[in-house]
Image (cartoon, rainbow, N blue to C red; front, side, top):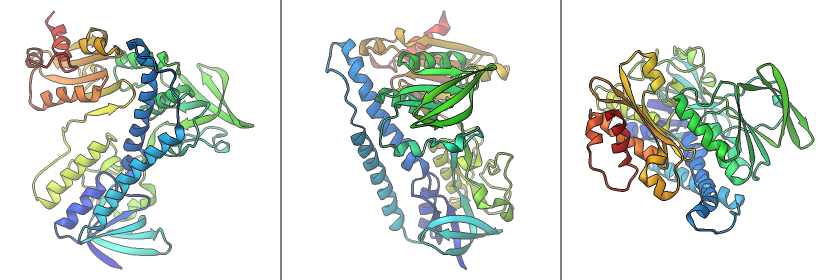
Length: 460
């Protein structure tokens, strides 16, 4: 049995920098990872998908550019080259992480799967065979999430895809059926549509993106349908059947049943925490009904000296939130100061095209909370920069406090929407009112300048 000052389980966007930081502070540290360093983000999430989305955007631009007077013919998709570029970027990032971890003093990288075998005791099933038992004064869990597979009749008889396995495809699907209209479903759906796939989205709710405002979701639906993507709402797949090389899905919609024949199925119906294999209860760690590890505002679990970071603890499942968890832990554990996740801002961006950048609360949330608020809303057809670049898709929207004029939240569905909404986030961080942005001087013609016009809507 080997004892450490600290053990980090999971080498994601919180786990890897945390392990290096702990070791750099002089603590004898072990970093346990069953797959690769970098977690989902580096290996089959953020970096590889956004790399492929860039290729899909380039394919779309070939056709779009014709409206700008530039005709270069039709896009020719070299999927093998797209995948090779994606793999090269992933491998470079992963190799850089491996080099950094390997060169860090006081840090031991252990490849294997960790399971609690006591209160602060971990047994690791090693990747190269055998097992090892470790103990530590402090333990940090960063095991993330994995795709959730719904119970559908016949699903085990087909070779369905997940957000992980779809990255390993060697060919473009002829017809991709997507279960779910969240970020994963819409990003992959639009990407493969632009590569030439026929795409059908199946969503059980009355509309896509039910956590976003209805007008934003409607605008996104319009954008996707313009690209010939089929979106079926209030629908669910109740059965799958393999027929030759194809898959037949039986779909139920308001009591009526129909079938869709497709070549591939992407299951994008949610994710679940990777906590079960940890056997957390033996360590005194409580989980909720979905398996997420319970933590307080300082990321402490119910077991003394054991912490949870990132997606495995529930809440917003974003890389930047996981990394912020790392900052909170280092502030509290290493620097011996006070930091908390309470009331922190949660920006995010969905990388469909145009991007949906988001910060703060939505209008539907403001209404539910009974807040006194005003709404500024504007279609991009009124934005000079959008008109000039020939891409007027999307809209901008902000929720402001009716009394103070402070910005409560915003959504920007536009080219570089993630960058534009960051301006609004910084304004919120600085406590600026909408009037200060309304009267701000921004370079012309930029997307940022459109914030003048957006908030002008509140002056009418």
